[in-house]
Image (cartoon, rainbow, N blue to C red; front, side, top):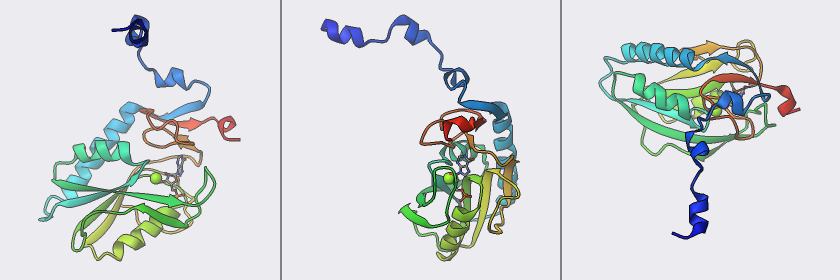
Length: 204
Ligand code: IMP
Ligand code: MG
Protein backbone atom coordinates (compact mmCIF):
# COMPACT_ATOMS: atom_id res chain seq x y z
CA UNK A 1 0.00 0.00 0.00
CA UNK A 2 1.24 3.49 -0.75
CA UNK A 3 1.32 6.09 1.99
CA UNK A 4 -1.33 8.06 0.11
CA UNK A 5 -3.79 5.20 0.49
CA UNK A 6 -2.90 4.72 4.14
CA UNK A 7 -3.74 8.37 4.75
CA UNK A 8 -7.28 7.80 3.42
CA UNK A 9 -8.08 5.23 6.11
CA UNK A 10 -10.27 6.96 8.73
CA UNK A 11 -8.50 7.83 11.95
CA UNK A 12 -9.25 5.84 15.09
CA UNK A 13 -11.22 8.84 16.40
CA UNK A 14 -13.32 8.96 13.23
CA UNK A 15 -13.95 5.22 13.34
CA UNK A 16 -15.13 5.42 16.95
CA UNK A 17 -17.29 8.50 16.41
CA UNK A 18 -21.02 7.83 16.62
CA UNK A 19 -23.15 9.81 14.21
CA UNK A 20 -25.50 11.82 16.39
CA UNK A 21 -28.04 13.45 14.07
CA UNK A 22 -29.33 15.67 16.85
CA UNK A 23 -25.89 17.15 17.40
CA UNK A 24 -24.98 17.19 13.71
CA UNK A 25 -28.00 19.27 12.77
CA UNK A 26 -28.13 21.29 16.00
CA UNK A 27 -29.50 24.75 15.29
CA UNK A 28 -31.22 23.64 12.10
CA UNK A 29 -33.83 21.50 13.85
CA UNK A 30 -35.93 23.70 16.10
CA UNK A 31 -37.39 20.85 18.12
CA UNK A 32 -38.29 17.18 17.94
CA UNK A 33 -42.02 16.57 17.69
CA UNK A 34 -42.04 12.79 17.29
CA UNK A 35 -39.24 10.68 18.75
CA UNK A 36 -37.75 7.54 17.24
CA UNK A 37 -39.46 5.43 19.92
CA UNK A 38 -42.85 7.01 19.19
CA UNK A 39 -42.40 6.34 15.47
CA UNK A 40 -41.55 2.70 16.17
CA UNK A 41 -44.58 2.20 18.39
CA UNK A 42 -46.87 3.83 15.81
CA UNK A 43 -45.50 1.70 12.96
CA UNK A 44 -46.22 -1.42 15.02
CA UNK A 45 -49.75 -0.20 15.80
CA UNK A 46 -50.51 0.65 12.15
CA UNK A 47 -49.00 -2.65 11.03
CA UNK A 48 -51.26 -4.59 13.40
CA UNK A 49 -54.39 -2.70 12.29
CA UNK A 50 -53.68 -3.13 8.60
CA UNK A 51 -52.76 -6.81 9.06
CA UNK A 52 -56.07 -7.44 10.82
CA UNK A 53 -58.04 -5.58 8.14
CA UNK A 54 -56.41 -7.50 5.28
CA UNK A 55 -56.10 -10.89 7.01
CA UNK A 56 -58.88 -12.41 4.90
CA UNK A 57 -57.74 -10.92 1.61
CA UNK A 58 -56.90 -13.89 -0.58
CA UNK A 59 -54.64 -11.97 -2.93
CA UNK A 60 -51.49 -10.28 -1.69
CA UNK A 61 -51.84 -6.68 -0.62
CA UNK A 62 -49.96 -4.30 -2.89
CA UNK A 63 -48.10 -1.54 -1.09
CA UNK A 64 -47.44 1.49 -3.28
CA UNK A 65 -44.83 3.81 -1.82
CA UNK A 66 -44.14 7.29 -3.08
CA UNK A 67 -40.48 8.23 -3.54
CA UNK A 68 -38.54 9.52 -1.82
CA UNK A 69 -40.26 10.61 1.36
CA UNK A 70 -42.13 7.38 2.11
CA UNK A 71 -39.09 5.10 1.85
CA UNK A 72 -38.27 4.93 5.57
CA UNK A 73 -41.89 4.39 6.54
CA UNK A 74 -42.40 1.82 3.77
CA UNK A 75 -39.39 -0.21 4.91
CA UNK A 76 -40.50 -0.25 8.55
CA UNK A 77 -44.21 -0.61 7.86
CA UNK A 78 -43.82 -3.58 5.48
CA UNK A 79 -41.89 -5.41 8.20
CA UNK A 80 -44.57 -4.63 10.80
CA UNK A 81 -47.22 -6.48 8.77
CA UNK A 82 -48.19 -10.09 9.32
CA UNK A 83 -49.82 -10.48 5.91
CA UNK A 84 -47.87 -11.09 2.70
CA UNK A 85 -47.38 -8.06 0.47
CA UNK A 86 -45.88 -6.97 -2.79
CA UNK A 87 -44.21 -3.59 -3.06
CA UNK A 88 -44.22 -1.00 -5.78
CA UNK A 89 -42.74 2.47 -5.82
CA UNK A 90 -43.74 5.53 -7.77
CA UNK A 91 -41.83 8.74 -8.24
CA UNK A 92 -43.93 11.84 -8.74
CA UNK A 93 -42.90 15.37 -9.31
CA UNK A 94 -45.27 18.06 -8.13
CA UNK A 95 -44.62 21.54 -9.34
CA UNK A 96 -44.48 24.19 -6.66
CA UNK A 97 -42.06 25.93 -4.36
CA UNK A 98 -39.75 23.92 -2.15
CA UNK A 99 -42.08 24.01 0.87
CA UNK A 100 -45.54 23.93 -0.75
CA UNK A 101 -47.03 21.77 -3.48
CA UNK A 102 -49.16 22.80 -6.43
CA UNK A 103 -51.18 19.72 -7.37
CA UNK A 104 -49.80 19.58 -10.88
CA UNK A 105 -48.22 16.14 -10.91
CA UNK A 106 -45.99 14.33 -13.36
CA UNK A 107 -45.09 10.63 -13.11
CA UNK A 108 -41.32 10.17 -13.11
CA UNK A 109 -41.52 6.46 -12.30
CA UNK A 110 -44.67 4.39 -12.66
CA UNK A 111 -45.58 1.04 -11.05
CA UNK A 112 -44.15 -1.94 -12.90
CA UNK A 113 -46.93 -4.50 -12.55
CA UNK A 114 -50.56 -4.89 -13.58
CA UNK A 115 -52.71 -3.82 -10.62
CA UNK A 116 -56.09 -4.76 -12.08
CA UNK A 117 -58.14 -6.47 -9.37
CA UNK A 118 -55.48 -5.92 -6.67
CA UNK A 119 -55.95 -4.42 -3.24
CA UNK A 120 -53.71 -1.35 -3.14
CA UNK A 121 -52.50 0.43 -0.04
CA UNK A 122 -50.72 3.71 -0.80
CA UNK A 123 -47.96 4.32 1.74
CA UNK A 124 -47.35 8.03 2.24
CA UNK A 125 -45.07 10.08 4.42
CA UNK A 126 -47.29 13.12 4.98
CA UNK A 127 -50.59 14.60 3.86
CA UNK A 128 -50.24 18.34 3.62
CA UNK A 129 -52.44 20.03 1.01
CA UNK A 130 -53.43 16.56 -0.17
CA UNK A 131 -53.12 17.64 -3.80
CA UNK A 132 -50.45 15.10 -4.71
CA UNK A 133 -52.30 12.22 -3.10
CA UNK A 134 -55.65 13.25 -4.56
CA UNK A 135 -54.11 13.14 -8.01
CA UNK A 136 -52.44 9.78 -7.29
CA UNK A 137 -55.66 8.19 -6.04
CA UNK A 138 -57.51 9.19 -9.20
CA UNK A 139 -54.68 7.77 -11.28
CA UNK A 140 -54.63 4.45 -9.39
CA UNK A 141 -58.42 4.11 -9.44
CA UNK A 142 -58.22 4.44 -13.22
CA UNK A 143 -56.15 1.23 -13.27
CA UNK A 144 -59.19 -0.76 -12.02
CA UNK A 145 -57.80 -2.23 -8.79
CA UNK A 146 -60.12 -4.08 -6.35
CA UNK A 147 -59.60 -1.31 -3.76
CA UNK A 148 -57.36 1.64 -2.94
CA UNK A 149 -56.68 2.79 0.63
CA UNK A 150 -54.09 5.08 2.15
CA UNK A 151 -51.78 4.88 5.13
CA UNK A 152 -49.85 8.02 6.01
CA UNK A 153 -47.44 8.42 8.87
CA UNK A 154 -48.25 12.12 9.26
CA UNK A 155 -51.07 14.51 8.47
CA UNK A 156 -51.42 18.24 8.96
CA UNK A 157 -55.10 18.68 9.87
CA UNK A 158 -57.08 21.61 8.59
CA UNK A 159 -54.82 22.41 5.64
CA UNK A 160 -56.10 19.87 3.09
CA UNK A 161 -57.37 21.61 -0.01
CA UNK A 162 -59.15 18.48 -1.22
CA UNK A 163 -61.16 15.90 0.68
CA UNK A 164 -59.21 12.63 0.72
CA UNK A 165 -60.20 9.47 2.53
CA UNK A 166 -57.12 8.44 4.52
CA UNK A 167 -57.97 5.27 6.38
CA UNK A 168 -54.81 4.97 8.48
CA UNK A 169 -52.98 8.00 9.94
CA UNK A 170 -50.01 7.82 12.29
CA UNK A 171 -49.93 11.32 13.77
CA UNK A 172 -51.73 14.58 13.25
CA UNK A 173 -49.10 17.30 13.54
CA UNK A 174 -49.12 21.11 13.65
CA UNK A 175 -48.97 23.01 10.38
CA UNK A 176 -45.21 23.52 10.41
CA UNK A 177 -42.53 22.34 8.01
CA UNK A 178 -41.10 19.10 9.35
CA UNK A 179 -38.15 16.93 8.35
CA UNK A 180 -36.75 13.52 9.19
CA UNK A 181 -37.85 9.89 8.80
CA UNK A 182 -37.77 10.30 5.03
CA UNK A 183 -38.97 13.90 4.84
CA UNK A 184 -36.56 16.40 3.42
CA UNK A 185 -35.85 20.02 2.87
CA UNK A 186 -33.69 20.44 -0.26
CA UNK A 187 -32.88 16.70 -0.06
CA UNK A 188 -31.39 17.01 3.42
CA UNK A 189 -32.49 15.55 6.78
CA UNK A 190 -34.17 12.42 5.37
CA UNK A 191 -31.92 10.19 7.45
CA UNK A 192 -32.97 11.63 10.81
CA UNK A 193 -34.61 8.85 12.83
CA UNK A 194 -37.12 11.27 14.39
CA UNK A 195 -39.49 13.99 13.10
CA UNK A 196 -38.36 17.51 13.82
CA UNK A 197 -39.54 21.00 13.00
CA UNK A 198 -37.10 22.71 10.69
CA UNK A 199 -35.88 26.06 11.94
CA UNK A 200 -37.56 28.51 9.52
CA UNK A 201 -34.21 30.35 9.23
CA UNK A 202 -33.01 27.42 7.10
CA UNK A 203 -35.48 28.22 4.31
CA UNK A 204 -36.33 31.89 4.78
P1 IMP B 1 -49.19 17.71 -0.47
O1 IMP B 1 -49.44 17.47 -1.93
O2 IMP B 1 -49.20 19.17 -0.13
O3 IMP B 1 -50.14 16.92 0.43
O4 IMP B 1 -47.72 17.23 -0.12
C1 IMP B 1 -47.01 16.46 -1.01
C2 IMP B 1 -45.62 16.14 -0.55
O5 IMP B 1 -44.96 17.32 -0.10
C3 IMP B 1 -45.52 15.17 0.60
O6 IMP B 1 -45.65 13.82 0.20
C4 IMP B 1 -44.12 15.48 1.08
O7 IMP B 1 -43.17 14.79 0.31
C5 IMP B 1 -44.02 16.97 0.87
N1 IMP B 1 -44.30 17.71 2.13
C6 IMP B 1 -45.46 18.25 2.56
N2 IMP B 1 -45.32 18.80 3.78
C7 IMP B 1 -44.03 18.59 4.14
C8 IMP B 1 -43.25 18.92 5.32
O8 IMP B 1 -43.71 19.50 6.31
N3 IMP B 1 -41.95 18.52 5.29
C9 IMP B 1 -41.39 17.87 4.23
N4 IMP B 1 -42.07 17.54 3.13
C10 IMP B 1 -43.37 17.89 3.09
MG1 MG C 1 -43.94 12.49 -0.55
